[in-house]
Every structure is written in C-alpha cells, then in structure tokens.
Image 1: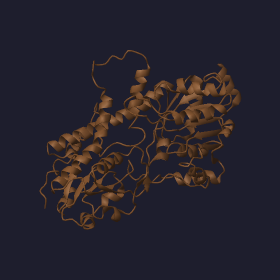
Image 2: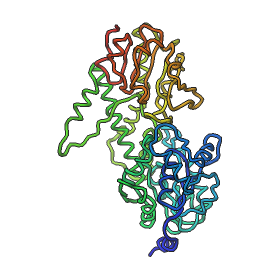
Image 3: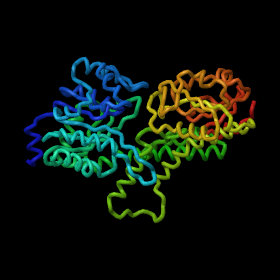
Image 4: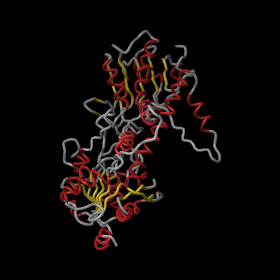
Length: 473
C-alpha cells in the first residue's frame, strides 16, 4: 500500500466536509453533503459584497434569488438539524476530512488568454495553512488543464509543507450545474472525478457518490477531468454559435430559423445524433464565456506540438466570436427598427427586458444585456432596465416595475426569456409607450410577432427573416 493509502486507511471514512465558496455551486453542494455526512462547514469571506451570505445561511435562508426548487427547504432542514454551518473562520478547515473549492476563475481578457486565478489562489492558500495529513482537497472550479496537479498542488505544498499524492489527496471534480436546477443537477448529472493518483480518485469518489441519485461516477485522472469540463462547455458554446449563425443566415434569406430548426431536429434514427439548440441575444454566465479560453490555454501550456491546419483560426474561438456578436446584432436590429420610423438610437428611450443571463434567475454574470446597454448609452440613448429578479448590477439601476420601465419607450428589447415575458400584451405595451409605432426586438423568441405587428409595432426578432421585413400597419 502507498504512503497516502496507508494514511487514508488510518484516518477512516469521511465525516466532516468543508466547502469553500458560498455561491451558485458551493451552497447547493454544501447542503447536499450535509444530508449525507456528519457535519458540513461552508467557508465564506466576510467581505462587503458577499459577507451577508453568512448570516442568511445560518438563519436557514438562501441568498440566491430566482427559482431554485428545493434549495431553501434543504438549507432550512440541515440548519435545523445542526448539520450545516457557514463561517468566515478559515482556521476551522483543520477540523475537516475533506474540502471542496468552488471559487470563480474568470479570464483577465481574451487576448492574452490569461485567467484571473487570484481568488482561487487565495482560497488554496487559506486551505494550505490549515491542511492536515490525510485530508482530501477537491477543486470544483473550472480551471485550465494541468492546474490541479500543477499550481494547486504547488500552492498547497508551499503553505502546508505536505505533498499532494503522498500526504494528502488532491482531485478535480468539476461542477456541472445550471442556475434554476442546482439541486437536481448535482444529484442527477454524472460526476466527473479525477484525482492526481489512484488513492486521490478513490477518496473523491467516496465524497461524491452518496449525493448522487441518478448520476454515476466517471473516474479519470485530474487533467482529463479538467479537459472534460472545459471541452463540454466549449462544445455547447459551439452548438449555440451554430444556431446563432444559422439565425443570421435565415434573417438574410427572409425565412424563419425556427421552421428550419424544427426540420433539422425531425430527423431521428440509428446513428443520428445532434443537439439543435436555440438562437438568442447572446451567451452569458460564468462558464461558457470563458471555458473555451481555458481549453485553448491548456493546449498552449502543454508544450507539445499541435498538428493543426496552418494559419487556421480555432473553430472554438470563432464560435466564441459569433456568440459575442449577438448583443451587437440586437443593437443593429434595434437601430434598423427605429430607422424604419425615421428615428435613430440617439435621443431614443429604449427599454431592456431582462438583465439576468438565464431565464427565471438572478444570475447576472457576463450578461449579454450589458454590452447592448453600454452601446446604447455610448450612442446617446436613454435606457431603462427591467428584471423581476435583479434590482442592481454593477451600479446600473434595474427596476422591478415593468410599467415604469416601458413608459415612453421608443423601442423595447427582450434579452432574457423570463416566464413573465411570454405573457406580454401588445396593446398594454403600446399604451405605455404612448406611440403609434413602437419598436420591439425579441432576442429570445418569447412573443408572437403577428400580435405585435397587428398592433402597429415595428417587429424585429433574431432568426425571424419571415417577419423582420413586414409592412407597418
């Protein structure tokens, strides 16, 4: 038996689990662990921006807004049972048998492809200071391939003097969650678990297996796990880019992308696999907007020759560029709609419906609406924003009163598919704008074009080439 194997055998089963980072990943993970293990500590910095989470969680409340089925009930349950606590005292890491790290890893920019690992490094150093022999450390954050066995192992060694794979177990088990279904995703999605060695992988499996209901464990080494996470998000981004590009083509050819999509999706049978997604106003969130660059950086840092067509742009980076263009396309559609009425962006009042990047959530990370907003402000528009779940974002005031947002607007742009927006009434919106011919730009295909066109609106929709050139009634 290896040294680490002997240490883990003497330490015994996992009883106490720590989760560093109380966000969209850390909170549901922590309370699910609390159902299966003796005690769980959630570690959260007591900062001005996020320290409030500590008190809320310890009061049995969820700091996450939006619709998250089962989360608040589970937080209240494990708090009442005394199985979960949130703390800013990182010295209590020494009490844990295992600790997971769910800290965001954004990129500084998309030119240098250098990630901002400062928050992750700080978290790892905190863990390293209190790391004990035989503990398990698992990175759940999305990271550049090679980070677990490289930077993470080095930092933990620097702070503790302990060696990963000899004195403690180290693994990567990437999160695979979507806001709006956090609890279900953790329980039902297969879990990728990759240790830096066999013992680390087995210890990480011991941690994650109890929380799975339908999902299964897929074991591999840590670098393969890192590539799996970055690649699966890169593939999804590629699929979104494919349908977004098709939507642009359909607009130019004056046809309906949703008819084409239904036709493509109708072919099913043996050997036929495809995922035809939906076009939209842009891609937001923490993962898809950056994981392509983690994958690209991992290849670059591998220091191995990449056999690839000379001077060809990466297909994945090209897909990123297409998805980043969609808020610009929304701006262009808005400008075209106003132009049909002899108006322009400058001096117009424009209402944005939806600031969160995903339906029925308060998650505003990398929202595509922000790029659109900034372009409008730059070009002299007056802009109001409505979102039923968000009240402020980066200093931008966001109203939860839709009537106030829409009143006097020359154009309305739908950026998020919140369920509230699928019930928008053309006559009500027209009355609020006070115009005979307002403009409406549907970035999520949530309204019926004809009902708005018949009410006198100038309609523009992504992929709706069949409607974008209508007569003004």
